[in-house]
Length: 229
Image (spheres, rainbow, N blue to C red):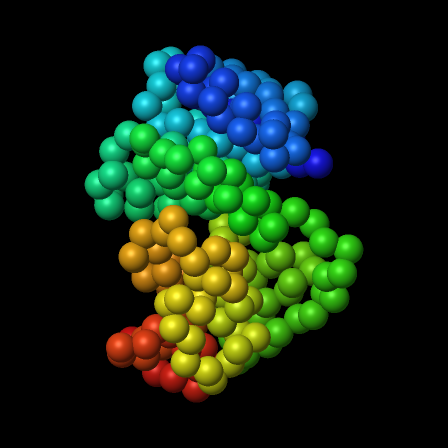
């Protein structure tokens, strides 16, 4: 079973999360700040990190930036007491895979943990298919994406979103359908989750950003023949 690193300066929060995750069958470890989390990840690793933003010594956002700078690609779910869109976007742009706003439902958090792990844990059945659309190539075996021969860095969630859109090339996909197939749940989500990730994915794709087109009133479509929006 997957190992979860819980990072929060409040012991009661860590205990609450640990109780529900262990009941769900996960192995848990704890850290009280970002610096301790980096030490734990460097020595023992983890399959997923639940990371609070507001902590002393080293806050969650700084910890996340340092993780990615050290090429630690462990999936991260951010915990924040602030619900402003800016904070969510900042976390996602730094490489977070999901976020939960305090106060949160422990059952919601467990559902999000399972959803993230279902996308990021290695699967023996992966076929290693490679998709090429003009200057864009997607390799599902190595989880790499290249635009005009140059590798672009995507978060695990952005990669899964791109693969889902590409494998449904030419189909108009509703936001609800994307949520169900990429996030693997259709509840406990913000209305703009899909829009936010599409925006970030387009920015990473550069000259191929126009391949993801907006279908007004429905959602999005992957169309390699489309002009850049």
